[in-house]
Amino acid sequence: MGKGIVHQYHGTASVLFRLALALLLDDRPTDAHDTFGQISKGAPDYVCSLIGEYESAIPSYSDAVDGEIRQKIDARFDAVRSGTLGREPIPLAAGEGDFSGLSVMIVGPSRTNRFFPNDCVDQYVATGIECGISVRAYSDDVIVYGSEARCSDAAARKHLADFATAVEDERPDVLMLDCGFASNPRTITPAFIHDLRQRCACRVVCLMRDCLDDNVAITEEWITVADTLVVGDPKAAIYSDKYRDLHAKVLTLPTIPTERALYHGDGARRDLPLTFIGSVFHPSRPMVLSALLTADVAFEAVFGDRRRDVAPTKEGYVAFLRRSRATLNISVHSETERLVTARVWQAIACGTVLVEQENVGTASFFVPYLHYLPWNNVADIVQTARFLEKNDDYRKRIARAGSDWYLQHYNAARLWTTLLNHACSKRA
Image (cartoon, helix red, strand yellow):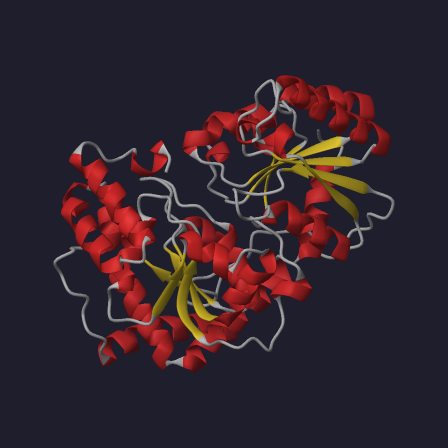
């Protein structure tokens, strides 16, 4: 458990937080919730606002609650029918580009952590192939996440030399880097990539999935060598006025592309209620989950060791989402930042209703109460889950509207066309 998860807690609160998290991971949500309650009043304001008062009961479900949610959803669908919705998607290129003869090499780690494959690189490769693009992955943990790979300095230099040889031999037109990491002498660096680009005349795309204030230095480092820097959020830190001169290099795209054959399509059996699947190593997530797991609502959460058992592969993860009637996402990452995560795209692609924390970024891609249901606190989540359980017709309408909007505006062909047009333009 790293420093980051408890960096906003000190002294006794830090100890209690670690204890509560351990209890949650040990499948003891009631004990975890009680322990979190002991530090709730001293938690950061933005975390407290998500939970609400620990001592306060969540209001019972009523006709008034049901009617209020129905009214908001009906208003959105009425606006679509009358042509008064007034919302346009973040534009991606229309149609499919002709990239025959163009080759792409995507470089990244083999796994996102000790257990799970690198779904970002995997999905880019799979969707690129779907779109008829010559794309392949070059996976090497040593040259990307040097701190996680145990080997000698001499071995690390050999890995770098092998990578350079592969690029020089293949000479891809576009070199894509999954580069959400700080470089060091044992890994690829911007200077190393710059030299390689000069020798091989390739364009460089840097994928920066989590462009946040606390890691913007990494973004600053990699944008120096990028022809295109891809971020998944229109409110990413790199879009601040401080970096105005670099904005022409930045491109906002879906956080992760999705394979049509795997994610999209009918026939899923929706035998699970509202679910959450993911990491709990963030100050807000375990508190929210412990509150939901002890509330009077149908809810299932998969994290920790159980996640490794339930969904160890991309296919297992997608299968779980496709069984879920609704999927919870917690987008908060700091007091001021909420991130459009990969789960937003994966859930909507799978046809499960996304129950998403209020987030300007997500609302830039999709329309709340039309393509997904927003929430501000635990009570909102509980009432939304109850609504969906009682109103399956509304659940199906929202799920279909979200999936259709996704396929129309953000499909893999549009994503790849937009990306390659940007990377290969003469602007850079």
